[in-house]
Length: 193
Image (cartoon, rainbow, N blue to C red; front, side, top):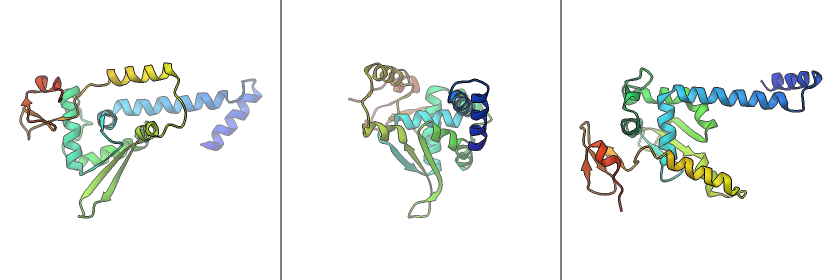
């Protein structure tokens, strides 16, 4: 594709377009396609929320544990996602759904590694939030206007409470940080002190 883009850029210049005008349009088109793939995959949407709300920039666990966490998030933000035919019905199909959107997630700054095993031989999924790593290593100063926008986005995207989880298969939820339990509407507003 690099040769294709290079030739098209040369043709665009010969037709009178400005330098890099084709390349910019081409990259924008690829970005739009990436966004459409993410929006069409409920697993990708929930995985992005999970990665943004992680306490650290790295998470590792079994597909079963990740499936439970993603299902809990889906129950908090949009329970109808689980009724979609694209939502995996069990943890054994989660890895294949993630692999379908893995390159698109990487474009969004989330690296997902599947197919590895831990020292006990269990299958594991690793999630690296590359955006958090970039924020920890300040390479350049962010203009104040961009910083304010980012704060507003993060505040608005707080759609779920990452410290609450479902108790087994019941409709009761618990907090990981304190002994409080309750239904989803009560626990969603719960904030540990």
